[in-house]
Length: 201
Image (cartoon, rainbow, N blue to C red):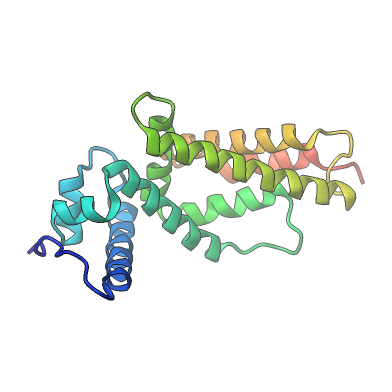
């Protein structure tokens, strides 16, 4: 049964409110991991999580803001499961990320939903999320490319920003193919890209 509407915050209410928000978020992550995000309304999510529609609005503001919060929290969980070697290449990171993502297809679908919404008008939360997401990931990969170039693992003649954009495009595109057809050679294709970027030893 859904809980009653949240009461006005009292002294100590901020800490309790943050804890309650985290509890809702943890449960929402489980729901999205199982169901994905397509055709899921805020009311349906509230029912699945066990709170009222008003409670979700109070804590997250909108469906889109909840989706962003769920994905960001879920992505941290995926990061914790990555089994990376010392000084991995950008593509090795994507290969491991793809492996971890396959365990939670609902979160992969959620990512795709947010990215699709981001390029449409009227979705500011998704647009802000995607813009910052790509900027952060691209800069992280650029730094990783430079480190691997200095170590002699990636060709020195390649522009790090171009490599970063290519790795992200390949990873996202292959992830979409995998959502539509789980036999698509996701890891194998990324490994091919890794081989093309490597120096001849």
